[in-house]
Image (cartoon, rainbow over all chains, first blue to last red; front, top):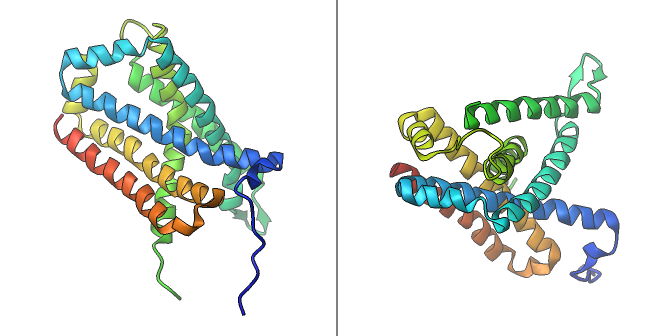
Length: 127
Length: 117
């Protein structure tokens, strides 16, 4: 005897808003990978000399590059927010008998994010 | 209990997700807005400065390598399950190989690129 599995249509995730949001969250990973490739190409251009690197950096001014960056930023920010909001579910901390409030755990990551962002901007831009 | 590779992939997924969450927004703002619109001084990412920083300083090089490669494993693990969720369960083994294989290939290419700097 085999268990009956009710067939699920491949469009199940379009049926409800939380499902759609879940799918958007999963798809943020594609933009994360895309930006990894962008950074890798940047480093590759760095190895090809000043001209190749200069042309690549000049192309960042193109409308298509700016548009792609903005779309990627929207998805990556959604990744960041959903990621930090999940941290209290994974990091279940106790202080004595009391569970550390979930907002405090997530809030610590948000605060860390601000600090990291400032440090990265300071190091990368040298300002 | 059956042996599983899951903890390894999940750890890489988790570490890569944290790197991306913490660092990618500011990096995207830098390369997508601040630099192209000249809002961060006069050409802060110029060749001399960045090339010197990456080639002369091992900790900068290693950090950049990790920032590029760990999130690839975040993508591989998450996208693998996304594809299975939208109906590709019958080819889940192939999907795993393509996703994790893609991240490993990206890492190898990164090693070659960073080696030549």
